[in-house]
Structure formats: C-alpha cells, structure tokens
Length: 229
Image (cartoon, rainbow, N blue to C red; front, top):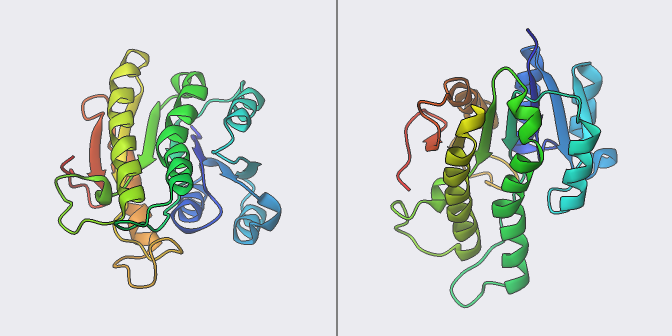
C-alpha cells in the first residue's frame, strides 16, 4: 500500500527534508509552499521524484487552505504535517504587535485550520495521523532563559490547540502529536544549532510512525522523549 503525506512549508529546512525522506521511501508527497515558482530546491526534488506534487499554499491565507482541501477532496491523506512557521525576533520592550499577531496566525491558528479543513481526507485514510511542529521553546517548564516572547507564546498556544484537537478527533480514530525537532541547522535555527535536518527528520518520522490512539495528544522530541508542557 502506498501512503500519502501532506507537508506545509515544504520548500526548505525541515519541510524539505521531510519531503525528500518520505519520497525516497515511496510515499506520495503533497509538498506545499507559498511560492512554488521560486522554490528551486523543492522543484529540483520534485523533478527527481515522480511521487512529489508541489502545491501552492500560504497557510496564513485560510481561503487558500479551504480551496486546497476542495481541490484534493477525492484524495486520502494518511499523515498531515503542519511544518510551516515563522520566528520573529522579540525581547523585553521590543515585541512588535503586528509581528506577534501574524505569528499567532501562522504558528498557532493555521495548524488547526489545516486539521479541520482536511479532517475528512485524514479520517478516510489508512493511517489517520496529524503531526504539528512545535518547539521546546513553547514549554513553560523548560523556559529558564526568558525572551523570545513572540515565538515562545505562539508555540505554547499551538501545544494547547493540538492537545484539544487530539481529544476532539479521537472519535474519528485520528491520532495527533506535537513535535519538538531539536535545535536544527536551518535558516530559522541558524548555523550554531546542534543537529542537521536529516537527523531531526529521521527521528521525527519514527515518532510519527509510532503514533497511535494510545499515545495521542503528547508533546514528543525527535529522539522519542516526551517534553513537559
């Protein structure tokens, strides 16, 4: 059986690595990004793998999400990966309100919009899984350094959103996990990060593979360890 995964923010970093690894393993990959025409790395990957479809999607545009769900209405999605996100810099006395509102829309609200728009597609699939990229920076228990008000708060919010979602979609046999990818060397993570995308995504895929209704609603790192909220 061939499974299908839908990935947001698939044009670079962790999203691009998810796309590559799933495609290499024979999955059908729906790789979504804001600007396919200029997503050169993703475009090259799609040319090398016939099982990758590149789709235009800006997760901040909820009408686009609804339109894509309608476009794909006859397709099953075994795994939805909410990967798209933003990291505006912010510190005490310097947290721009507009940046904050935009970050909440992309990091916290869009993952729920994706999940609700594609619930039927997921429920009709074989695997029935939703995975959302969060961060240990959204853990209140782990916060010992302060700062990063915008990013931290939006990730804390999406943690709660996904916890509620895990309860609400259980009757449809859909399992939900919130993921911490580690500190990854990407445009967002920077060059001083501790692990590469290959290591992170390989671990995250194992977490997704092991996801089921018995462990739904948890916050888990790429190494399989549960993160305190």
